Image (cartoon, rainbow, N blue to C red):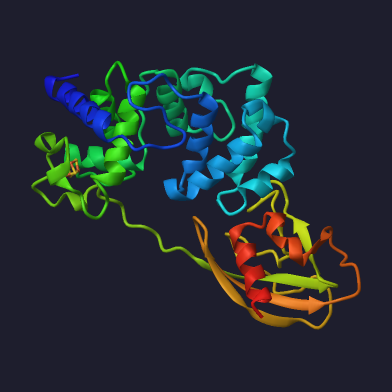
Amino acid sequence: MTASDNAISTELLDWYDRHARDLPWRAAPGQPAPDPYRVWLSEIMLQQTTVAAVKPYFAKFLHIWPTVEALAAAPDDQIMAAWAGLGYYSRARNLAKAARVVAELGAFPETEAELRKLPGVGDYTAAAIAAIAFGERAVVVDANVERVVSRLFAIEEPLPKSRKVIRTHTDAITPECRAGDFAQAMMDLGSSVCTSRSPQCLLCPLSRHCEARMAEPEHFPFKAPKKEKPIRAGQAYWIEREQSVWLVTREGTGMLGGMRALPDDGWSAKGDGSSIPPFDGEWAEAGSVSHSFTHFSLDLSVMVTRTEQEPAIKGEWWPLDRLEQAGLPTLFAKAARRVLAG
Ligand code: SF4
């Protein structure tokens, strides 16, 4: 660590001591580390999701399952239903698996390398938990850190190629002590001061070290051009009988796997659905909804029929007045609202 790297970490930690965000999963700066269960749960929920969206889910999960052992003992369908609306559902499936591994071990692993072995815990998450919950000097690089470091060192190589050099610089400025506070300070700086579109350089505790400050910092980090997202078309089927709707549980490993859903025509990231309803009948289109997934966008038409028959697809009748409790993922919740709005 050079004198300048050292000054960056010291000045950032001073700033964090005065300006740290008060978040329900955090300990105040300099205080004993928070419960690893809270750190892990929050980090999994925060993957690709905003703090504002996560807060109510974090409170709900802690209320229902106050410990990792309680979560480990919960059935998958309850965990999936509690997760409904937060998106990226493979996270919930891995959450259940990881909770069971931790319960079996008797405690959370305490090192980055061991944490990395838990289902759903990637490089960033393992480093963040190791640093925040266990004080390990781990190098924590999320999108906020990528942005701040690209600007601090005016890294012109575009992402994702620049990840290696960003990591090297982050490693150099990460202090031996208080690595968890340092990681959280970088996240706070990135989300409140060094924001993507309008960095507040005049308020920034690191401005005297920042090489991009005088060179339009909002242009950093440079990014390789994105591929256009393909648009897929599909249909969902609303099958109604006596104030109930037929819901299926999606295949465990596919898209939205393990979640309750309306039956559909097999659309996927790779292609459109077949547009063939699950049985012959009088189907009427109730409109369509759009949804954006990571690698594609979907235009989903919602087809409606009323029937006295039991559909020949595996599922269950679900009362319309309890539909909120079915835990439908956002796409199907939107489709349901479209039908119910008439
Ligand atoms: S000086 Fe500006 S660009 Fe540089 S780190 Fe601070 S807020 Fe970001």
